[in-house]
Amino acid sequence: MRQLTSVDAQFLALENPRQTGHVGSLIMLDPSTAPGGQLTLDAFQAVIEQRLPVVPPLRWRLVEVPLGLDHGYWLDDPDFDLDFHVRELALPAPGTDEMLAEQVARIIARPLDRARPLWEIYLLHGVRGNQMAVLTKIHHALIDGMSGAEILGALLDLSPEIRQVSAPDGVGNNGDRVPGRLELLGRGLLGLAGYPLRVARAVPGTLPHLEEVRSLRAVPGVPMLGRISALVQRGLGGSNARGFGGLEAPQTPFSRPLSAHRRFAFGSLSLAEVKAVKNAHGVTVNDVVVALCAGALRRWLLAKEALPDKPLVAQIPISVRTPAQAGSYGNRIMLMTVPLFTTEPDPVARLRATHQALREMKESQQAMPAALLADANHFIPPALLSRAARLSFALSTRWGGSPLWNLVVSNVPGPRFPLYLAGAKVTATYPVSVITDGMGLNITVMSYLDSLDFGVVADRDQVPDVATLIDELREELAVLTRVAA
Image (cartoon, rainbow, N blue to C red):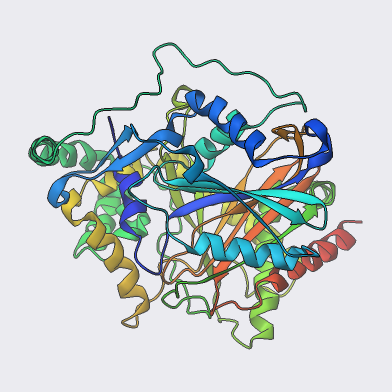
């Protein structure tokens, strides 16, 4: 068995009847390259079954410790049922992008069954007439962006020929023994006894940066303790690098408690055009992506007569996974806080301000310990972690507090070479990610071949016209491209 980290447990803790914790991808496929020119469910399942030994998280089932005394465990499911996890359905003709987006929204709104490994894959027929797609759902407690890419990489091939994968030595398919409640209770008590030691180890590197951990704001005294510790560190000659943890997120139409339903939109931008803008202004691709999001949101908020008089605040997940941690799965991330300059009407000035803000964020990140989020969670006993996580979002949405963040903006680098799934060529990969109370909008982009593939998830009631954000992103890029030319 493998124990969840405190960050993994936090993604489970945030779930409620309205809020899910899984992420995924909408992978567009050209089945003409598959054997026989078509991709069947049997062939698709055969590939996944063959790759299971090299993607162990797909067999992991959650086992929780009684009374929540410690973080739960993953065990290799002895009753694993591939047919339950790999499914198929067909869109009615003509299978438009709008129909596909609606089907994705309905599927991702449903929670995963915690009695089974926390993932599902859907093979979708009738997409755009004769094309196909695959929708993945896997819980964020199992993966972050980089480890999710590792899992996809194990399932995908570099050519239409389906490669054969051998199980690593010592890997079997019998599953782990399921521990009894008394054994789990004993493990929980041992973990509880070690809690003070975990706190003591986390204190030196974490205290000066507690102000940057926005998810702990609801814990009484934590923000003040963080500010005092940071002042002491600077007074002793420590780092002066500052993040943007002190930013206050304004109220927006997507800053309310979530409903149980979702909307999804997807679309692609030219990577060559984004790079032309990058080169013209001496910035990075990520700077351009974040500035495009700020511009698109400014346009959308102006149309709703809901533009705040101060910048929006974005949560940007940053991977801190080292090369030595490849294949370890789970979550190794920081949650950085960055302003989106929606108050700036000039696209070029907005891009330059974004470049400066992200540069300062990187400097702040270098000054912070890589395990900040995990160590900060050690300040809360495991039995209280779920309550504290939910309380943070409740305080910011129900009782007049400001949101922790307004939205998530994430940019995941992908391959520049073609990939194949069960012989079918991958034509695009649109991310599907998480939203939470007070943060009812998520814009995630993944690069693939010569495109930036955007996936936008929103609360169904708060952002009913989410597809217009894809149009606004395209228009914002067109403006910057004209200026760059």
